[in-house]
Amino acid sequence: MHSKTLEEYKKGIKIKYEIVKEGEHFDYLYNPSRGKLRDLCWLIFENNPTQDDLNVFKNLLCLDFDHTKKNKFKEQKDKFRPIETFFKGETDPLNIDAINLAAVIVDFQPRPFKKFNEKCRIEETKQIKNTDKAEIAVESEKEVIEVEGFVKSENEGSNEDLKKGNFYSNVQDVFSKIKTQKINPEKIIMVGIGTIALVSSACLKKLDRMISKSKGSSGEAL
Image (tube, rainbow, N blue to C red; front, side, top):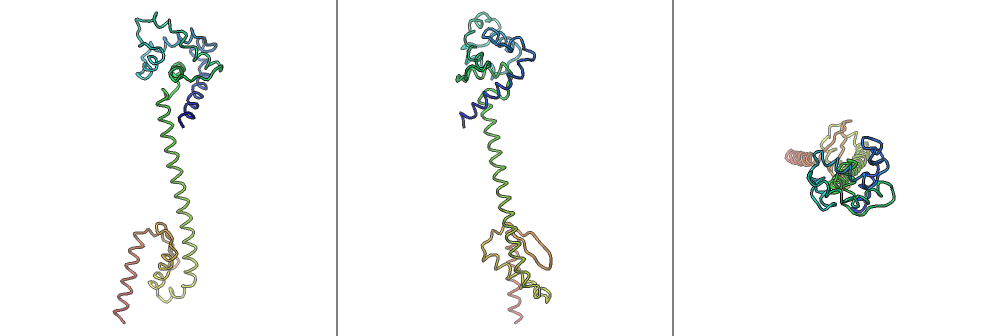
């Protein structure tokens, strides 16, 4: 995962380079050299760099950015060689600090790599959750279709009872058969007197109590 994400990070930086090399910093980027990249880096850091960018600067060049130490900075030209060859497509850099500074130079976001990696993980988690939700929805729909077909077939044989007013008897019979089938009660479609209703597990429990009460009343009457 980490290796794949790093490759995506480098690919994103290279794409951004191809876009910006003909823009505002054309003179520095169109035909980059270590000296040009060093000078552009100084120019960029003179304009309110973020703390993350300052950390990248220090990690690669082994010195803090300081306006009063430009001469010391100029001695660091060779540190920009991996960035030069990366932009030219000659090498695939392994030094994460050089890669992060390349991101600063072309203003690639999100950076540094730590933030890019975190964003990728968040997006991946969202995709997994969305996939899980979609799979649950499909399974629920299958259950609805399965139960609807089952209840419909059962109801066709009990229409005469419904016409005679034996509603509770019909519902009890269908409900018992649904439970026997061991179908998930979270999404149940019951058909009664031409009406389709979506019944949750809580509703099924209530319906079960109603049926039991009805049976008790019938026994007392007898």
